Picture 1 (cartoon, rainbow, N blue to C red):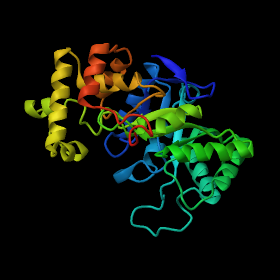
Picture 2: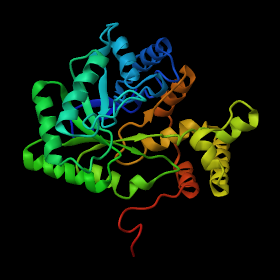
Picture 3: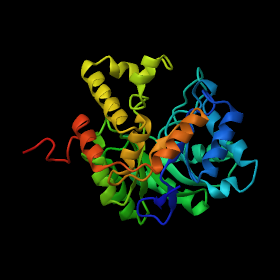
Picture 4: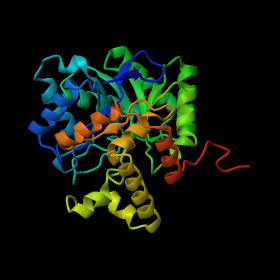
Length: 330
């Protein structure tokens, strides 16, 4: 495994982030534990989750599965850089939504972090992330709450997710005024098919020393060889991939992509991940395996070297928007 610094911090993280959103609703606890053991054994030390993950298995279930894995010992917790998130409402499905059980008020941040620590069976979180911007809570209040948690030793760093470029700048400028450390990571939607982050999110992150952690690197399976698998009858297309493939222009792009990758004797999903690892500002894409085979494929991508010829061809199929403001101005 290869490692890099997380943004401007001294923290070293693996070039892949193990996403755990499937743990609970799609991957049972024993299999989830096996996947985490395999990832850690391969050198993946960056694990990402969120307090709301669990879906049909119940909100918080994913954190509970990670907690029972930590409880097995063997230096599991010490070796992992653990990231979780706060924002979503944690009221059980079908229950009454109380007004202060979501978003980023100081009250909810305090409540949420203690609940996550209990589920995760740990006494600290390495990176505590805001899952979304909160337009109704002042950033001064958010940083005040974060500073208290840092002083208490409950968290070490703060990160963001789904923040636009101007909010990354605003959050870090207000943190600077307070003498707070500010954001160290940003999780954003970024892959070959969706490159909007290149306009402002990634440049802002680079300017502020914020590590970029792309989520959905295969765009819901669209970049994972979906047409080939469907043709072989090995997988039915559903969800985001099916919706996107219903657009003729997208199907044409994906077919051109799969043909190109096949010409080079490579696997589509591995190329999509390897491409992200060549992008400026990117620290570690999030991979969310449901099976051991999916994890093994992601691990191979770390060592995959893409030729300039292939990189240029990928840009022709999936052209980026270009930097801001040139992308929308003269």
